[in-house]
Image 1 (cartoon, rainbow, N blue to C red):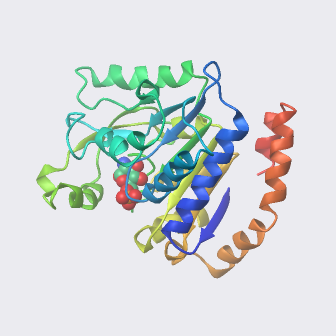
Image 2 (cartoon, rainbow, N blue to C red):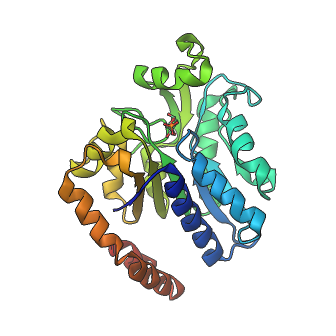
Length: 285
Ligand SMILES: N[C@@H]1[C@@H](O)[C@H](O)[C@@H](COP(=O)(O)O)O[C@@H]1O
């Protein structure tokens, strides 16, 4: 995996926004071959969404041929609830870009058959040939999507009971009323994320520092589900300085030094992809 460190959340958002824009533009998506993008909610990806919106408004990026799959949704919140992830995504992103709403996929936390909803979501991802790039965020306990500590690292889209820490952390969106935070969510699994061809994760703020160090300096562990990214051949974590607070100085120095050659590696990846040599692209990480 690679770790990119930027000064602050705005610079992180610009970096990831430009990165995703380049991926989409290089892919040259068409109606027959759309770019399939996985997306998260939370405050961390907001600067990225802001930057992507700016690129669309400037005309250097389009989502006309992009299909999206969101990571998760609360169980029991109607789509039009102010704190549903559905509302969040349209408010913060989709209603400001040129994506046709039919190309947006978000789990329905009010479905009568929640298990059927999860299975259909996995099937739909497969129908589109899998996810090209999954953008993710993490919780303070290192969860990716809503894959709370103890989640199976081979999990698929399913119903998940939220950890008490997550309920506490998310109470800020429910007027600090812990009782108002849903107890369950539908979430893509760790394996769903790992199946995507590329994973990019945004981690900002000191609150996430312990989770970041556990995920990249220690072993793969179901208690910090982000650590499963160590098994992915093409994973990138983009963080701000605050999020590095618990990392060893040598870890930070190492990743900063390898960033210098990143552009060359990128150019090499692009050339290999054009030749259709996908497998080798992965094993270069
Ligand atoms: N299910 C979401 C996660 O997908 C997200 O990564 C996390 C972080 O939120 P924030 O970026 O606001 O810290 O919030 C929720 O738990």
